[in-house]
Length: 620
Image 1: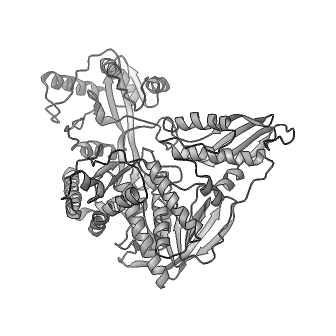
Image 2: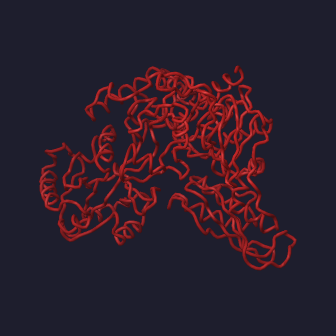
Image 3: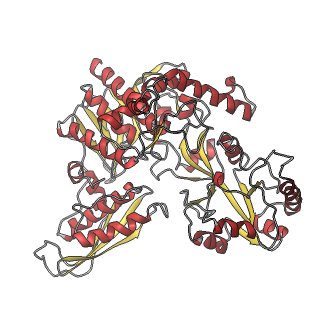
């Protein structure tokens, strides 16, 4: 995706926040033909994990160096952007024409925004202030500019409403999920020969997967909340929303042939597509731009919604603070909360979910909308449930997931608890249908699971070019973490490594003794494991301490099938709507994880909330 200069210029706040944190140092020698003054200039832009600070060095009127000074982006994932973007800035002597790097769009945009801020200073300019709104009478306010927020704003504008979109970071795009889409009756399904899929069949999957959860957890359907009308609404409208973003707006998918989820239980028919999330961002921004150009939408970046403005029981706007500290009240007949989840809120995660965890959520996913919905009388449902993967490695004090083990991919390894005891068939069924059951163990107790293997197993994995830490092809992270001794330990005996890892060594010795017998016989008498068992043979033993890492929070304010947030009596709160991750996948689909519903849900709920809010505002 190309860096959208036009959108950046129109949404001046992107540059303003970068410049707000900018500084200049060094000597100057006047303005050259390029307009650049010699010196070193700093700029800051909003990345995925937080602000990115970059310094540009100008010598002889030319940019000679672009250096990243500070960032909180995810190691490995963002590396290509940090390698390519600064080099491109020096090569092109600016940001014009530089494309974002696939797979790390937000990091790329943060680097480019930081460079633009520094360039303004290098040309003798001053740091701009964050603008306030020029639209005096919006019909609808959208809080949050991610996939759901942009979809809501586009849809409300399509339906004739004037829209003010406020986004607390310096760029649009939000979290954007992992790239998968899901829907029934899409053009791609039909052209692949699947002509008999229906919303009812999709909904049957929700019911079946919930039954599996109930059996695993020993609960009944009455023990948790599931608004089945939302699940059916999604099933009915998912296909048209996939068609909208792919066929109408032009987003790309890797293969138009539908598939089954790769990490979750299979569905009753293929209806999942692996897409390019940067293309979703690109096409939504392009569509939004049309309404910015027409004056139907105004966007304020670097502007945080602090609380709702109430008129009795009705929501009539938001109170905001921008990064200059300017506080403004904006009023509208309808407000849509598209603030995402709370995966980066240690307060909320520890209150409702995990004591030990890391997260893939960006630093801005702090649950702002949850607090605002409660302020208006909304009721949070299913907050104890979320989508998290097993095998996270908490390598430092930050919440951001930097390293992980993709546990379903590895033979030989065993899982134990703090008592040194196994508790599950570590591999489960080959078709992946046991994955939810296996990973559910990371959601219990204090959320720690220890993974054990020995030197022979490590050597075998190396020979297979199969690094135990994801992406660690040269095993450098393995060696570093072993040296650090915070999540990985080794020992020449089971007792030694158990003591280092802080688990019961006596029990672990008994566990290994039993497991070795099972491996010899080819059958696990305790948990039924039959696949890829290998005896522990001694030498060096290794133990990882792992935690869950959060992908998507799945609880949220209760709402009806018009996208309206409802109160404890199930009554719609006048003027308040929501879309995106804040809706809560568990509220819509029950207690299960289904590939593709996160991204497509942003479209389905965004189209719903945008249309409903526009209708309400224009009739009010």
